[in-house]
Length: 101
Image (cartoon, rainbow, N blue to C red):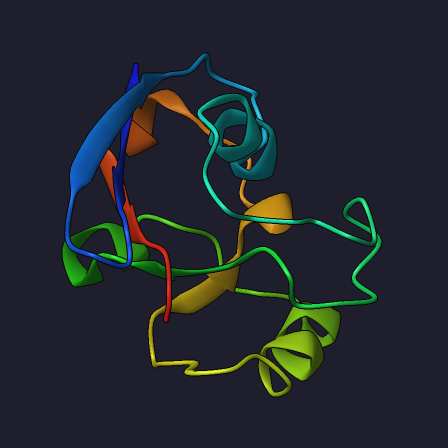
């Protein structure tokens, strides 16, 4: 499966992934600038991404804890999520996410 990343400058890159992979791990393996400081413990928002609107509806709803962390994320939008909380499935093949400013 493929994940598309849109960099801050608009450059698009793709990365190969497998069902079950965590989006944060795929992003970091692709050298995307996502820190993931808390290692997925929902204690930071350093892996904040903006999910393409068409793909956003394919994701399960964010947990209350994730929503709380997104409230602290810089430039959060309606389709913002934390990459550490997105586990890829076949339905997410072609997922497109933007790295926020």
